[in-house]
Amino acid sequence: MPGRRVHFADETAPPSESRSGSTHPTPTGHTPRRPRRPMRAGVAVSLSGPYLGTPPAQIILHPLLAATNGDAPLDWDMSLPAEASRVHLARYPPQLVDTVVCQPATNPAMQCVTIICTHLPWTITVTPTPSATWTAPYVTVGDVLHTLYHTLHLGVTSAELGVLDAPRQRRVTATYIGRYRRVVDPCKRDWEKAKRIKRIDFLCDRRAFLGILLVEGGIPSRGLPHGAVWLLHTLAA
Image (cartoon, rainbow, N blue to C red; front, side):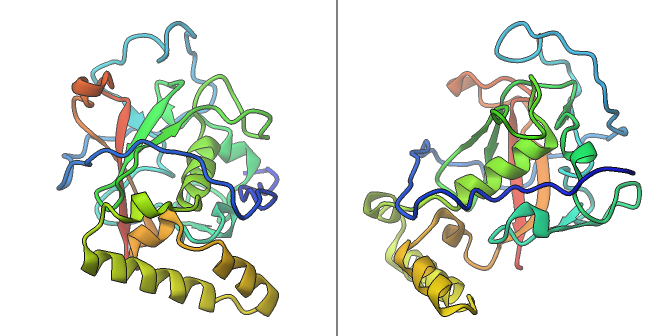
């Protein structure tokens, strides 16, 4: 499949940049998996409402994002930019290219998707990324990957770290230390150390992207309908 490689990392952001995220308990356990059908580019959409029409009974996630049978669609350590990942699905190029990441993240397409994770106290809201090469009037594969990477690399405040009990705080701190010590270049290592704990450190060693699954029924108490909420699954990197 032709296409240019894409760049997801927001490396121009200053070390002190931090963007607030909602802190909400996340559901535990795995969500029943729905049957999948191939995602096709060029999905016809209607741009009415915050979501593209009324969410139908069946909403399908793009194969490059969907968790299935314990096999990750991407070999992606989320401590690294998404372009460092390798694609595991034979129907796609081995590396992410623009013709793939510009495809709709869901079928039918949606303008807003919420991602939650049992290992994180924040929700992650994905909307179209302005001025990105993969941008569209709906959430694309590129929007999901870019937003996950950017959000997980935001700094953590003392109050946010304080929601954890003491043993978990120690594990998160040890993860942070191990992360910056892995940086080979001394200048970059010091720069990474100075940025302190990031949200990615809350995952501890579970930094590998396993995929995302639909949360059946959404979260009605927060006004999130069926199809609008997805659960991020991770495994040890």
